[in-house]
Amino acid sequence: MIECTVWWARPVAVEATYLALLDEPERGRYEAYRRDADRRRFLTGRVLAKTVFGARLGVAPGEVRFDATCEDCGKPHGKPRLAGVEFSISHSGDRIGLAVTTVPVGLDVETDTRRAEDNLIEYALNETEQAALRGLRGDERVSAFFQYWARKEALMKATGRGLKIPLQSITLDGARLAASADPALDPARTQLADLNPGEGYRAAVALLTMEPVAIAEKPWEATEASRTS
Image (cartoon, rainbow, N blue to C red; front, side, top):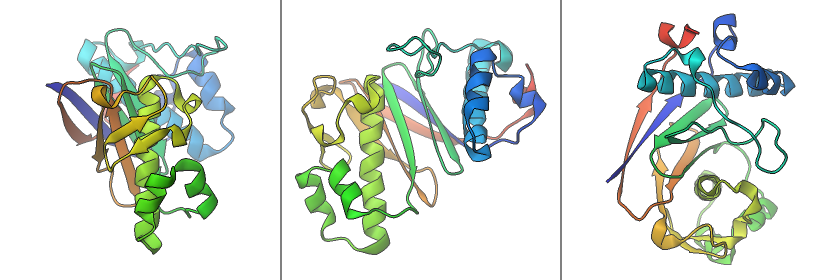
């Protein structure tokens, strides 16, 4: 049995003690965001992850260092990595999530209070999936669409290839990968599960494994421990 823990957090305040947990490349990424909301989400993701891993490793959160080197260009804006563990960070609106496990994993959370225009649905979902939405109306249709979107994003993140995998190359049967045109996603070696990030959000987690998966979701609150660098 593969265990996966997902922590859900809300944006932390922009405080010097939290900013001190960022290393130089992370501070550069933080400052590159123009919107305060985006800065807070990025900061929270790093504070959350460093606090969780600091507790696991028995070190202060500020001592946790991620490798976010982009495999394509070498700049520090890629998926963060830490030796000996698999994890994924996702954020949307006021929800920031961290999934931690022992196999390749992808986490995605989406707000479901946005509009789901027909052209967006046609872009993201193939004909089989679009057919599943045709009987739905209003908020139910929007919510179902963003659940599909979260599932596909989680799958793509788990491979490490992200948007290099076309959304329509993935076919879902509910919360199950039914087919994929990309060899990085094999339905027989992929576990997918919907999550409960709270009202107004839809989320999913994907793990690349043949083994059954046990998922635990936990709330996370900033504490004095996360302020210690």
